Image 1 (cartoon, rainbow, N blue to C red):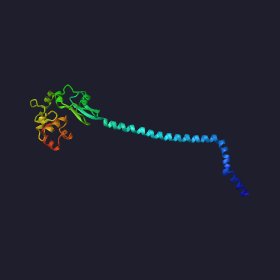
Image 2: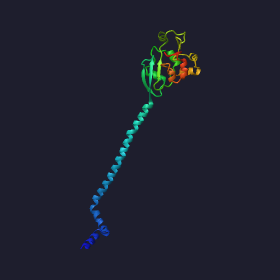
Image 3: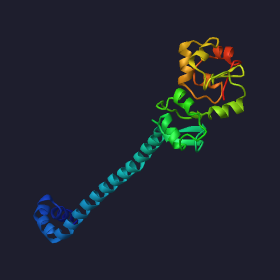
Amino acid sequence: MNFSLNNTFFKEFSFEHLRSTYPIIIKKYRFSLLLGIAGLIFFGYGLITLLSSSNSDDEIEYKPVVANQTNENKGTMVVDVSGAVVNPGVYKLSIDSRVWDGLIKAGGLSSGANREWVSKNLNLAAKLSDGGKIYIPTGQTGITSTMGSIKGENLGSVEGFIDINTASEGELDSLPGIGPVTAQKIIQNRPYSATEDLISKKVVTGKVFEKIKGKISVY
């Protein structure tokens, strides 16, 4: 009896039996099968789209931040503009600014500015550097009243000291260890807020500075 049941089972689920009945099954359930296949296709497409969108959003969020930080760091600098200008202060300028731009930012020269000194000693086309300083001295009358005696028309020598902001090339050349080339470097790197600026701006060496520090001044 068991043998007969087994034969019946194998007969019903044999290859020949399935081949003859699968068209009927497909025809009967074809709508459900189509819905299932379509669902799988839409699920796969939605998953791929979601992953692609997520990666794209991450890139858009990240790249502009880096670009903005780079532009901000490289595009500006800060300069101190003081002395005889309309609005002395610390200003933010573009990285390629010149001395002239700094003076314009500070409102230009004041009425008491020593314009003769500016025209002779200040290179308005010189490039500024971050953390730099522009200092404009007052007129000759102001210098006389605040600094004491001036030897003749020599605005660079005051009470035995040579003012590195106003001295001529010849006066600077007379200092020990200073020749014509270094004298020109001192003039080109003006203005100075302290005599030690000669070292910080790498105009003279420490050894030369020791020789001249008792003979120079800044006003």
